[in-house]
Length: 334
Ligand SMILES: *[C@@H]1O[C@H](CO)[C@@H](O)[C@H](O)[C@H]1NC(C)=O
Ligand SMILES: *[C@@H]1O[C@H](CO)[C@@H](O)[C@H](O)[C@H]1NC(C)=O
Ligand SMILES: *[C@@H]1O[C@H](CO)[C@@H](O)[C@H](O)[C@H]1NC(C)=O
Ligand SMILES: *[C@@H]1O[C@H](CO)[C@@H](O)[C@H](O)[C@H]1NC(C)=O
Ligand SMILES: *[C@@H]1O[C@H](CO)[C@@H](O)[C@H](O)[C@H]1NC(C)=O
Ligand SMILES: *[C@@H]1O[C@H](CO)[C@@H](O)[C@H](O)[C@H]1NC(C)=O
Ligand SMILES: *[C@@H]1O[C@H](CO)[C@@H](O)[C@H](O)[C@H]1NC(C)=O
Image 1 (tube, rainbow, N blue to C red):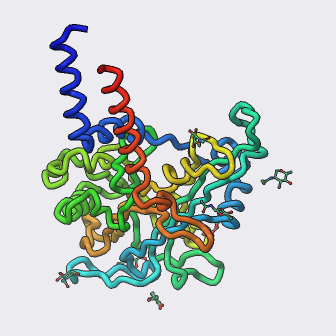
Image 2 (cartoon, rainbow, N blue to C red):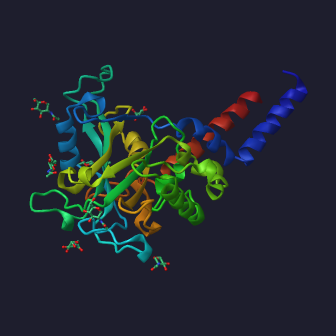
Image 3 (cartoon, helix red, strand yellow):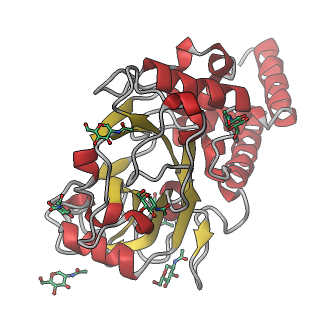
């Protein structure tokens, strides 16, 4: 190796060690950015486990949960004309999430190859939008005035860049978004939406959000806007709508919480707006529009919350490993 190249290499190494904080970020972009999830549908859970077994396990063996109340109206009563300003809100509207660390990978039609280390498990979870129980009728279905409509926006996070700061978000998405961006996003969601169609807010068209750059990148991912009429609200079983059920795309053996810390700590962004179908543009006001980042932050008794083992442990481990590898490389160069 030529002398000057060698000096240059060594210098770069030492600079790298001094500025170590920037190294894990680059590596993190590879290892943490892309989230590998398997989604469930009505019939099959992740890994094609029977859906009923998936649901039963989450109900009976949760490790962490999250519940995030949001403002929402009394949809059993007619909507007040929008000219009156703020609609009154009733308690009980919320987003919730449940996560299990070790869901058994049995009765599945799809499984990793046997590695002789024992049975496989996977981390799984479910996100649900909940209406107030006080609005359920005698038959257990929601009582809904025909004038109400709802838009539910969710962002896809599978195979897209993820904003890791969201893993410690308090439910408001303010770990990555500014208050101004959130307010602008809500009004964009309201103004872009036309009757019968829910149009997702587009970050690149909102200057206060665009300014935030990479940290908010999850909001550039595919967003789905679901339009729900009064009629479809009445079909929600027990007044609950599941918006996503998923499992880790990587299986693990019992006692290995890597997948739990990675997949279980994800926050799922969701925006809800309520509409009055009878007004010309449907817009009420943004007091009934909310943005949430839904995360299983609360450990159930006897469990640890995902990513909690050594607070911010994922980042820390990457950082230390990074230092070790850079040091090793420098020694090789010498
Ligand atoms: C797998 O299927 C069998 C037979 O249907 C059932 O008894 C068992 O409880 C299932 N296992 C799990 C973990 O659900
Ligand atoms: C919602 O509105 C209906 C109809 O006006 C009323 O009977 C009910 O008490 C209200 N419920 C709540 C929780 O405010
Ligand atoms: C609606 O609520 C917001 C915040 O809760 C408040 O600032 C505003 O004055 C209210 N508007 C009316 C017309 O009451
Ligand atoms: C809106 O129209 C429906 C019928 O389409 C009616 O049942 C409902 O009470 C109306 N709501 C308001 C606020 O006028
Ligand atoms: C009540 O909800 C169930 C699903 O949970 C649905 O099958 C049924 O049709 C609903 N009833 C009405 C009157 O909408
Ligand atoms: C733990 O599971 C992950 C997959 O979630 C795997 O990549 C890793 O190698 C496993 N660790 C051990 C020590 O087996
Ligand atoms: C998850 O809950 C089970 C009990 O259902 C417990 O044995 C296990 O240790 C918990 N895992 C974590 C990571 O808390």
